[in-house]
Length: 297
Image (cartoon, rainbow, N blue to C red; front, side, top):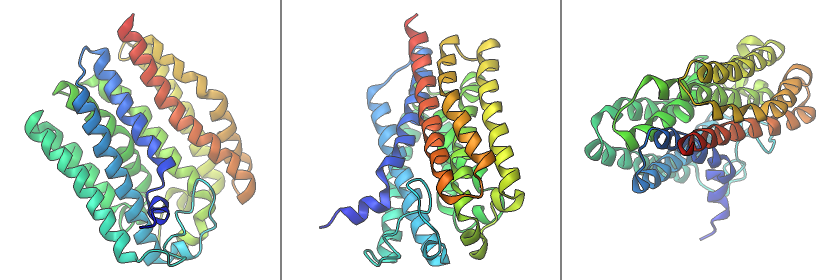
């Protein structure tokens, strides 16, 4: 069996987002004095499979809508070319996406019985966002928000819950940067695909705002995210070592510069997309390091 096409569907480098999300949620729990290694491993496996499901179903639905036949791909956007090249059959990719979703949900069901059914709303909203993002949510101007929830805030809160058995205001405050970061990750990656997305019926923020205004919006959200971290630490909702996350500001400035200046250039926007990925992964990682450092102090 040739695994290369399936790796193209899974897009392993993008799965690092799931790793840092679970790491952050677990680190917040460790700061509060809770840690269960088995739950950490299961949460990580579960979220990775849910993320794989996102990628596979997005490939399937984008191919069926014709988007994948029109997009110009970058290392960070445009999806996989596995289906347009005919390497795999669409039905096989669809079944793979559903199977990955089922594995992730089964781990969620395990946590329902072992930790508590309070996790159910997080899993339901997350599963809804996974399956309906491409065919429905991305056509209603709310795709970015649900991406920020499904691969941002909810995994952080869920990873915290499976360690502690409860949720509270501090973990909600600490998970808001994840909402913004994943929202922005998707937002900037939508710039090169505007025409293909519009032709296929998508209605996302870059289409509705226009690229120039979307670049301003993207940049403002980055500023809000850093101010949120500073405010959360100043008000005592997060420990001061989380300010390590401010080390990603230079990469944010590079990404914002590209969004504001190169929004209409396919080639020149690619370095901004790369910087955007660095911001997303780096900020999550440094927030986790901040919580872990605080737990040792």
